[in-house]
Image (cartoon, rainbow, N blue to C red; front, side, top):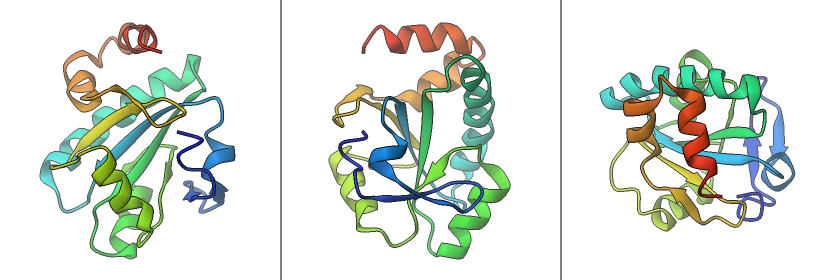
Length: 148
């Protein structure tokens, strides 16, 4: 993913701009396609946040990138700041959002994919796996790492 997002601006909870390539070097990346107006997204986001917090305690190499389908920059930032974890997002209006939606064949939201550094999908339905197995965060993490 660091290769795929080199030169792409990401922002974090502190509103700091980061270079995607640099920020994601050596990280296991989850692309989280979601929006504030989507009820299933609002139901899944707290589960993802809880899973993320558990995993980051022992695996700081895990990073989530919020790929928003919100209708404005204000909606994106409000949803991100108020409801999401300590991860990053691609700013509203970036052409990379539609390219990622197409590349990863995202038809509905919420969708989450776990991606290798080169952009290949490792886990196609990370949302389903977190929903169904996320209580055992470490066990699920080990399952995922067996694919790397």
